[in-house]
Length: 433
Image (cartoon, rainbow, N blue to C red; front, side, top):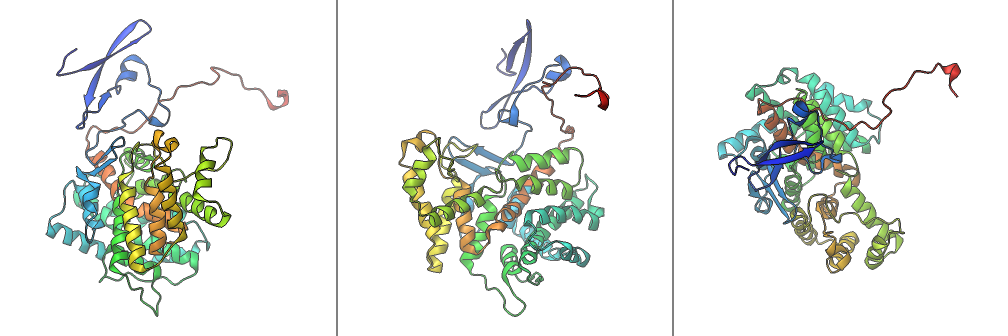
């Protein structure tokens, strides 16, 4: 076997097939089966794609065994700094490098310019039933953006892409806030151009015509941090959905709308909602954290312990550590207490000492503390997944762009292993038993 061009040997039905082996930057080996079907009519079987690399990417690196997350090579911990800046991270993910001062200022100015919704689109909220799920509104409005900005739909033009990306990120916060206001029967506020991205979002959420919401710096910083920590996370369900839809040459608006729909699922973006429901149930039901862990270890007990363990991380989720510290800071500065935070602290303390959880590498994940922090900021539970979507938008856009910049990209078309009846005859209805 050549060391310069390593191969893997597949033996099947008495035939030997050499397959190229690729090596990632981190040393990860990947057997290239991209031509296996075309050349040998053989498919691989990997339900949920847990052992399959569907693309090559240079955006986000995750090492779940060691609890590492990096954006374009930068450790996630380095973004936890005074005045964290979501817009700077968005530029980094989409364009591949930290922005210069001029690039960041121009990007921010574009965001401010495009934060308003077309009045006809804004009026569409009046047709949405009160109490509608905010994620449903977000997905629908993303699709409608394509009706108002058709000139940005063609692919391949860099300037058009920048304009489309800026519009969807900027308008998403306005759409998200309006979805919340509609559910509460509150009047819509117009964006304030004097405010930065996260401050403006909180203004749109909580200001009233006669009472401006005053954003404390610690709250604005915490909001930036939440969005930054959710900005991208490799090939998760929603990101893979954006790539699959984008592979059909679908425009950016349609592709991101599909990502919102995928994120809506409780096993993906809705996980922190389940954590909050669990903590509230513990508090209201009189269970102790000790009772909780005992129930979680009992296979006969239907109780589920949310917020522990992760499909990728087999170590402490680095995002959870940052969010825990941020939550403690916000509560300390606001001089308030939350019994749910106390329950969460105790659950974590006990789980990290319990061999059952330690041996199974069930550590707190990002969802365990993100809901508590959002609650401290004042975000209602039904908006948690929407906040996730706002944060994840730059990642979706970066992944969409990376895919479209690849000239060899083909439409995604997975294979299946057919297990049904090979041939059957149509039976007239009068002859069916």
